[in-house]
Amino acid sequence: MDLKLELIILPVSDVDAAKDFYVNKLGFAVEMDQQLGPEFRVARLIPPGSRCGIAIGTGLSDAAPGSASGMHLMVLDADEVATELNSQGIAFNGPYHFIEGIRIDGPHPAREPFNTFLDFCDPDGNTWIIQEVPAEN
Image (tube, rainbow, N blue to C red; front, side, top):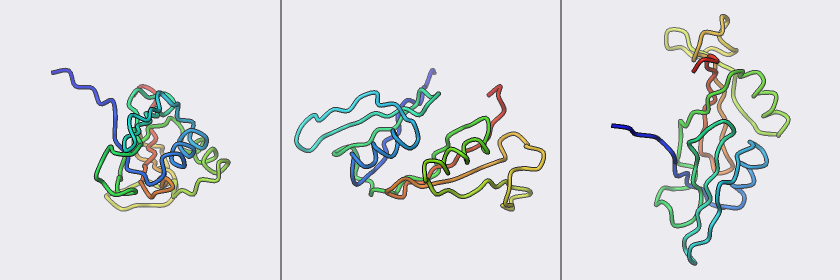
């Protein structure tokens, strides 16, 4: 089987405010934004460097705005992303890492692959995790 994850529906309360946040604060690209009827609008937004995107809109899901959690954005340098989030005025937690299942403030001391994290919420409270990964992944 060849299965590709291409799209995650993200429940938001205000499509235009969410679109502004993802595009103007996080640098997502707008692949499309269409009003397909009075109760149905869909905007597909793609994170920089990714093929999998998010869909925000109206009439897409019964999920409550802000109920999505644990989506991961993979980055090469968590410190660089923290600086960018700060410059955009986005509140975040981290960096932090885990040792034996215990969360510890600060990046992993040896920058162990997959073990330095940041997290933030969008305006609705949907939570994202930023995870530092090695360049070859």
